[in-house]
Image (cartoon, rainbow, N blue to C red; front, side, top):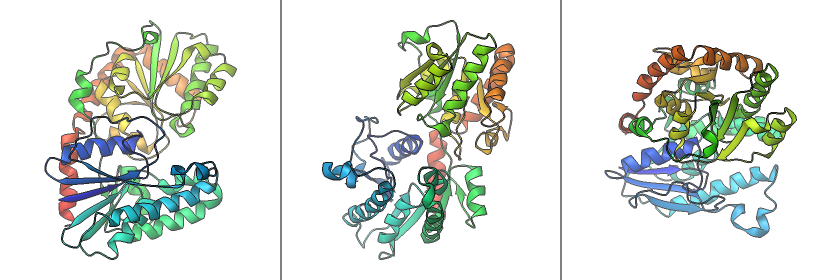
Length: 388
């Protein structure tokens, strides 16, 4: 099959949850299928996925960021204009690889701009199937950055979803959200390289991790929605209670300065560490004593699945994002969402009953085994067959 993925990041020069899913699925598909990835040309980071198979073809599209004299303008609401420029640039790039002879599956890895680019191609080609892959509440997340455009984004998303031949959702909660908007979707789960996480070595990590203190790790981009503030606040609460042997380790890209300032104001600077993007996150998960899963997004969190596979006890928000992993058995310890005091209490609960929560972590590893990428790719191909 000819499968084209559309993503509005500079993958493989950018890493996040969507990019990790794309990397793992595409590299497992390319031996038997024709895979093309259309992604942004502009690069902010070095090559982060450096073992992409040569069989995968990349087509790059440009935005305002590719031109120095325009890049300085891409701030605040001008970014929205840039999104639409990227959409038409992506559609133009697509036209160069589509012919009338072959059948194509275009998988847009959002519910808005990528779908729009795919629709420009599909409406003139009956041999194209367009799939919108919902990786979370895209319109709502964008609205947090551009609140004046919230209504526009919600209307635009609805129009784009109506254009898709099928909609995939990356979690039961995402499916429920789409249903509330009037759209039927099919579950397309996130996954984990289960054996790799289980077998990964913890040797050679930073010396700062060689401490007898309680180590809590958080995996993900440094954003407020990832619970970074609440975790730092919880550390400060524990410190004020006299529990001074807890250290936080944040793994992921992003600017840490404002969070460092927060830690400094709360007098826990020496206990909060920002280690940046890592390709071997499983090693850090296994090295630490507790994993904090505190994302406020939606879908089956990839870092949560990786956390379960690591067999390290997990503390998580009591939200639909994480409750869906407890459908078969208890896999995590839940605390009240966005509540630092509850989070601090939960951390103490795990520390004081660590042997019990290690048994819960064994349940979590068994649950995570069902999310191995080999199973996810089978589901991917099955879902394609269902819409042929």
